[in-house]
Amino acid sequence: MNFKQFGVLLSISTILGMNVIATKALAETPPSQKPPSITFRNAIASGGCIVTDQLLGSDGRSLSLLLDKFKASEGGRQKCILRIDTIIPSGFQVQDVQVLYQGSVGVNSQSKGVTLTRSYIFNGGALGGIVSARPITTVFKSSDLLFQEQDDILVASASCGGQGQLGANVIAQSSSGSSIFVDSADFSAGDVIFRIDLSPCR
Image (cartoon, rainbow, N blue to C red):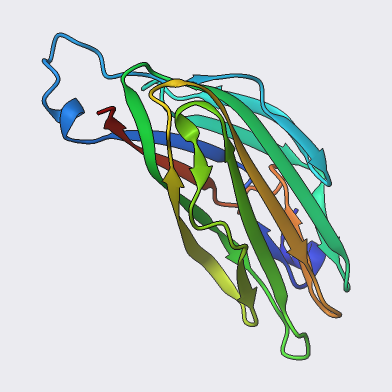
């Protein structure tokens, strides 16, 4: 899958990773103690995408999801809904989340471009609720072989550790003369990285 085959193509990551970064308390953890890990259950996808594989990072706090069947062209619209049940380690709670999207985009001069809209849901346990819950939309009106878009989400966590659910809703919208393709079959795609800041419970 490449630009020649699709003409005008937006290629976004199909890898969803979650990196958990602890705060000062982790920095003070004795070397003999392993930093806390997050437990990730099997990811569930619906809408216009499929999770073909998921890979747990060696640090125990990151997860990569490989996606398939997520594309839209010539005014088409596609939605990808992702849900991942998690268990936050005891003694820690989530403060905020950064989500970095990396990929490539192609738009011809006659097209109105394509958009990528994201919204997030965090429920239960130390994930708590979202403070900044408005959808975030990026409009691509010109080609960019490698773009990076970061979303900064504030999380109001009321629990200390426990089970919760991470949710991401992603909508790809194309216009006439443009195409968007979010699929692990496209090796020019980048990735989507979730970084979760933890703090010790008080």
